[in-house]
Every structure is written in C-alpha cells, then in structure tokens.
Image (cartoon, rainbow, N blue to C red; front, side, top):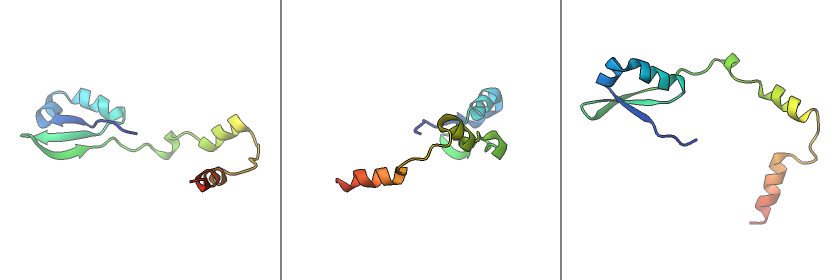
Length: 83
C-alpha cells in the first residue's frame, strides 16, 4: 500500500503531541525533523497477535469446507504459460 509519510518537527512534537499521537494510532509513520534535517522516524507500535483477525475462521465462514479443483498456484502457472 502506498502512502505519504507524515512529517513533524521537534517543536510540533512538543506542542502538538495529541495530533501526532492520533496519527500514530491510525498506523502512520512520522518523520521527525530538526532544523530541516531528518533526525529519526516514529513508528506505530505493532499489533499484538490477538489483535489480528482469525483469517482461517473468516475463510471457513465465507467458503465453508469446499475443495478447489485447482490451487491458486496452478491457475497462475497456467496463465503464465501463455507468455
């Protein structure tokens, strides 16, 4: 996913921390500048394992226990064979 990294100065970090904290909570990375030079990056904390959705359960709920005749890899290989 392409996104523009947010920029903040040390002064903005000191005086507008709530706004920067809100951006971090949304998952944005922030470049930190002092006197027009980048001095670091602030990264959002990683989610804990239990914060991630159970993709296997979601897949079972949507598709049930159906078996595919061909795997996704086989479909891709067949399509690439033409080129």
